[in-house]
Length: 243
Ligand code: ZN
View (cartoon, rainbow, N blue to C red):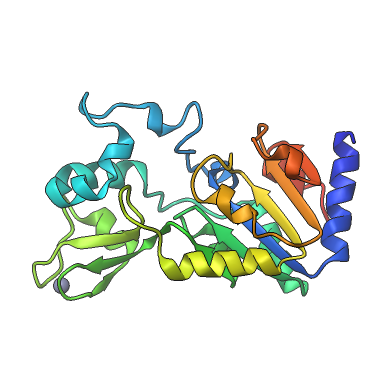
Protein backbone atom coordinates (compact mmCIF):
# COMPACT_ATOMS: atom_id res chain seq x y z
CA UNK A 1 0.00 0.00 0.00
CA UNK A 2 1.19 3.52 -0.69
CA UNK A 3 0.63 6.33 1.81
CA UNK A 4 -2.73 7.49 0.51
CA UNK A 5 -4.02 3.92 0.37
CA UNK A 6 -2.91 3.48 3.99
CA UNK A 7 -4.78 6.62 5.03
CA UNK A 8 -7.89 5.40 3.20
CA UNK A 9 -7.59 2.02 4.93
CA UNK A 10 -7.23 3.70 8.32
CA UNK A 11 -10.30 5.82 7.59
CA UNK A 12 -12.23 2.65 6.74
CA UNK A 13 -11.14 1.06 10.05
CA UNK A 14 -12.37 4.11 11.98
CA UNK A 15 -15.64 4.32 10.05
CA UNK A 16 -16.49 0.63 10.28
CA UNK A 17 -15.85 0.11 14.02
CA UNK A 18 -17.24 1.67 17.20
CA UNK A 19 -14.87 0.59 19.97
CA UNK A 20 -11.62 2.35 19.21
CA UNK A 21 -8.65 2.26 21.55
CA UNK A 22 -5.89 4.81 21.03
CA UNK A 23 -2.57 4.05 22.73
CA UNK A 24 -0.30 7.08 22.74
CA UNK A 25 3.30 7.88 23.55
CA UNK A 26 5.52 10.94 23.35
CA UNK A 27 5.09 11.30 19.59
CA UNK A 28 1.54 12.66 19.91
CA UNK A 29 2.69 15.48 22.20
CA UNK A 30 5.82 16.50 20.27
CA UNK A 31 3.77 18.77 17.97
CA UNK A 32 2.57 20.51 21.16
CA UNK A 33 6.18 21.37 22.00
CA UNK A 34 6.82 18.62 24.54
CA UNK A 35 10.06 16.81 23.70
CA UNK A 36 10.28 13.05 23.34
CA UNK A 37 12.27 11.66 26.24
CA UNK A 38 13.76 8.82 24.26
CA UNK A 39 14.16 10.08 20.73
CA UNK A 40 17.63 10.70 19.32
CA UNK A 41 17.41 14.40 20.08
CA UNK A 42 15.44 13.92 23.29
CA UNK A 43 16.54 15.03 26.71
CA UNK A 44 17.65 11.54 27.69
CA UNK A 45 20.84 12.14 25.81
CA UNK A 46 21.83 15.01 28.04
CA UNK A 47 23.93 14.60 31.13
CA UNK A 48 23.07 16.74 34.10
CA UNK A 49 25.75 17.80 36.58
CA UNK A 50 28.13 15.61 34.60
CA UNK A 51 27.10 12.62 36.63
CA UNK A 52 23.43 11.75 36.68
CA UNK A 53 21.61 10.77 33.54
CA UNK A 54 18.08 12.19 33.30
CA UNK A 55 16.73 8.67 33.86
CA UNK A 56 18.60 8.51 37.16
CA UNK A 57 17.41 11.94 38.23
CA UNK A 58 13.73 11.16 37.80
CA UNK A 59 14.09 8.06 39.94
CA UNK A 60 12.58 7.29 43.30
CA UNK A 61 16.03 7.23 44.91
CA UNK A 62 16.97 10.75 43.81
CA UNK A 63 13.50 12.07 44.65
CA UNK A 64 13.86 10.84 48.23
CA UNK A 65 17.56 11.58 48.76
CA UNK A 66 18.16 14.70 46.70
CA UNK A 67 14.79 16.39 46.14
CA UNK A 68 16.48 19.70 45.19
CA UNK A 69 18.21 18.05 42.24
CA UNK A 70 15.04 16.16 41.33
CA UNK A 71 12.79 19.24 41.31
CA UNK A 72 15.37 21.39 39.57
CA UNK A 73 15.30 18.95 36.65
CA UNK A 74 11.59 18.11 36.90
CA UNK A 75 10.44 21.73 36.84
CA UNK A 76 12.69 22.77 33.97
CA UNK A 77 12.37 19.67 31.74
CA UNK A 78 9.08 17.97 32.51
CA UNK A 79 6.56 20.73 33.11
CA UNK A 80 5.10 22.53 30.11
CA UNK A 81 2.34 24.74 31.50
CA UNK A 82 1.84 26.50 28.16
CA UNK A 83 1.46 23.32 26.05
CA UNK A 84 -1.90 23.04 24.29
CA UNK A 85 -3.57 20.00 22.72
CA UNK A 86 -2.75 19.70 19.03
CA UNK A 87 -4.98 18.54 16.19
CA UNK A 88 -4.22 14.88 16.90
CA UNK A 89 -5.42 15.11 20.50
CA UNK A 90 -8.43 17.04 19.21
CA UNK A 91 -9.20 14.54 16.46
CA UNK A 92 -9.68 11.66 18.90
CA UNK A 93 -11.65 13.82 21.35
CA UNK A 94 -13.87 14.85 18.45
CA UNK A 95 -14.30 11.24 17.36
CA UNK A 96 -15.71 10.54 20.82
CA UNK A 97 -18.11 13.49 20.49
CA UNK A 98 -19.26 12.05 17.15
CA UNK A 99 -20.38 8.88 18.92
CA UNK A 100 -17.43 6.49 18.82
CA UNK A 101 -16.45 4.69 22.03
CA UNK A 102 -12.90 6.03 22.10
CA UNK A 103 -10.71 4.94 25.00
CA UNK A 104 -7.32 6.55 25.27
CA UNK A 105 -4.38 4.88 27.01
CA UNK A 106 -1.38 7.13 27.30
CA UNK A 107 2.21 6.95 28.47
CA UNK A 108 2.25 10.75 28.56
CA UNK A 109 1.96 12.73 31.78
CA UNK A 110 0.90 16.03 30.21
CA UNK A 111 -2.90 15.79 30.47
CA UNK A 112 -3.35 16.96 26.86
CA UNK A 113 -5.90 14.27 25.90
CA UNK A 114 -8.20 15.46 28.69
CA UNK A 115 -7.52 19.10 27.78
CA UNK A 116 -8.69 18.27 24.24
CA UNK A 117 -11.92 16.81 25.63
CA UNK A 118 -11.35 13.05 25.77
CA UNK A 119 -13.22 11.63 28.76
CA UNK A 120 -11.95 8.04 28.87
CA UNK A 121 -8.22 8.38 29.46
CA UNK A 122 -5.98 5.88 31.26
CA UNK A 123 -2.67 7.42 32.30
CA UNK A 124 -0.09 4.67 32.69
CA UNK A 125 2.62 6.96 33.99
CA UNK A 126 0.50 9.39 36.01
CA UNK A 127 0.07 13.12 35.52
CA UNK A 128 2.01 16.29 36.30
CA UNK A 129 -1.33 17.90 37.14
CA UNK A 130 -1.75 15.84 40.32
CA UNK A 131 0.62 16.30 43.27
CA UNK A 132 0.15 15.12 46.83
CA UNK A 133 1.71 15.80 50.21
CA UNK A 134 3.44 12.60 51.31
CA UNK A 135 2.49 13.28 54.93
CA UNK A 136 -1.16 14.38 54.90
CA UNK A 137 -2.27 13.74 51.30
CA UNK A 138 -3.28 17.32 50.50
CA UNK A 139 -3.63 17.90 46.75
CA UNK A 140 -1.59 20.48 44.88
CA UNK A 141 -1.81 21.48 41.21
CA UNK A 142 1.01 21.85 38.69
CA UNK A 143 1.23 25.62 39.17
CA UNK A 144 1.96 25.17 42.87
CA UNK A 145 4.88 22.85 42.12
CA UNK A 146 6.13 25.01 39.25
CA UNK A 147 6.04 28.19 41.31
CA UNK A 148 7.79 26.84 44.40
CA UNK A 149 11.29 28.26 44.48
CA UNK A 150 12.95 25.00 45.43
CA UNK A 151 11.33 21.83 46.76
CA UNK A 152 7.52 22.00 47.05
CA UNK A 153 6.39 21.57 50.63
CA UNK A 154 2.90 21.25 52.08
CA UNK A 155 1.67 23.63 54.80
CA UNK A 156 2.14 20.66 57.17
CA UNK A 157 5.83 20.46 56.22
CA UNK A 158 5.51 17.27 54.16
CA UNK A 159 7.21 16.81 50.81
CA UNK A 160 4.86 17.21 47.82
CA UNK A 161 5.25 14.35 45.33
CA UNK A 162 4.08 14.49 41.72
CA UNK A 163 1.66 11.66 40.88
CA UNK A 164 4.08 10.54 38.19
CA UNK A 165 5.58 7.06 37.97
CA UNK A 166 9.29 7.54 38.62
CA UNK A 167 12.02 5.12 37.63
CA UNK A 168 12.21 2.25 40.13
CA UNK A 169 8.50 2.67 40.91
CA UNK A 170 5.81 0.20 39.81
CA UNK A 171 2.94 1.24 37.55
CA UNK A 172 -0.42 1.91 39.15
CA UNK A 173 -2.29 -1.38 39.27
CA UNK A 174 -5.68 0.10 38.39
CA UNK A 175 -4.25 1.84 35.36
CA UNK A 176 -2.63 -1.39 34.20
CA UNK A 177 -5.80 -3.44 34.61
CA UNK A 178 -7.82 -0.74 32.86
CA UNK A 179 -5.41 -0.55 29.95
CA UNK A 180 -5.46 -4.28 29.37
CA UNK A 181 -9.27 -4.36 29.54
CA UNK A 182 -9.65 -1.47 27.07
CA UNK A 183 -7.20 -3.07 24.64
CA UNK A 184 -8.83 -6.48 24.86
CA UNK A 185 -12.31 -5.01 24.23
CA UNK A 186 -11.35 -2.76 21.31
CA UNK A 187 -12.27 -3.48 17.69
CA UNK A 188 -9.63 -1.08 16.42
CA UNK A 189 -6.35 -0.34 18.20
CA UNK A 190 -4.35 2.66 17.01
CA UNK A 191 -0.87 2.96 18.51
CA UNK A 192 0.57 6.44 18.09
CA UNK A 193 3.96 7.97 18.68
CA UNK A 194 5.63 5.21 20.64
CA UNK A 195 8.40 2.91 19.54
CA UNK A 196 6.80 0.13 21.65
CA UNK A 197 10.26 -0.64 22.95
CA UNK A 198 9.45 0.80 26.34
CA UNK A 199 7.80 -1.43 28.90
CA UNK A 200 4.91 -2.00 29.19
CA UNK A 201 3.46 -0.93 25.85
CA UNK A 202 4.74 -3.92 23.94
CA UNK A 203 3.38 -6.47 26.39
CA UNK A 204 -0.10 -4.91 26.28
CA UNK A 205 -0.51 -5.26 22.53
CA UNK A 206 -0.70 -9.03 23.00
CA UNK A 207 -4.13 -8.58 24.59
CA UNK A 208 -5.66 -7.11 21.45
CA UNK A 209 -8.31 -9.40 19.96
CA UNK A 210 -10.00 -6.97 17.59
CA UNK A 211 -9.97 -6.47 13.84
CA UNK A 212 -7.58 -3.66 13.06
CA UNK A 213 -4.16 -2.96 14.54
CA UNK A 214 -2.69 0.29 13.30
CA UNK A 215 0.76 1.68 14.08
CA UNK A 216 1.38 5.35 13.49
CA UNK A 217 4.89 6.49 14.22
CA UNK A 218 7.57 8.66 12.67
CA UNK A 219 9.85 5.68 12.20
CA UNK A 220 9.47 1.91 12.06
CA UNK A 221 9.02 -0.21 15.20
CA UNK A 222 9.82 -3.88 15.95
CA UNK A 223 6.07 -4.61 15.80
CA UNK A 224 5.28 -3.29 12.35
CA UNK A 225 4.91 -6.75 10.87
CA UNK A 226 2.14 -7.50 13.40
CA UNK A 227 0.15 -4.47 12.30
CA UNK A 228 -2.56 -4.37 9.64
CA UNK A 229 -1.43 -0.87 8.73
CA UNK A 230 1.85 0.84 9.63
CA UNK A 231 2.09 4.54 8.79
CA UNK A 232 5.35 6.47 9.13
CA UNK A 233 4.47 10.11 9.43
CA UNK A 234 3.81 12.92 11.87
CA UNK A 235 0.49 12.18 13.57
CA UNK A 236 -0.82 15.70 12.95
CA UNK A 237 -0.18 15.27 9.21
CA UNK A 238 -2.13 12.03 9.33
CA UNK A 239 -5.20 13.34 11.15
CA UNK A 240 -5.36 16.28 8.74
CA UNK A 241 -6.09 13.70 6.05
CA UNK A 242 -8.80 11.95 8.09
CA UNK A 243 -12.47 12.82 8.38
ZN1 ZN B 1 0.71 17.92 54.17
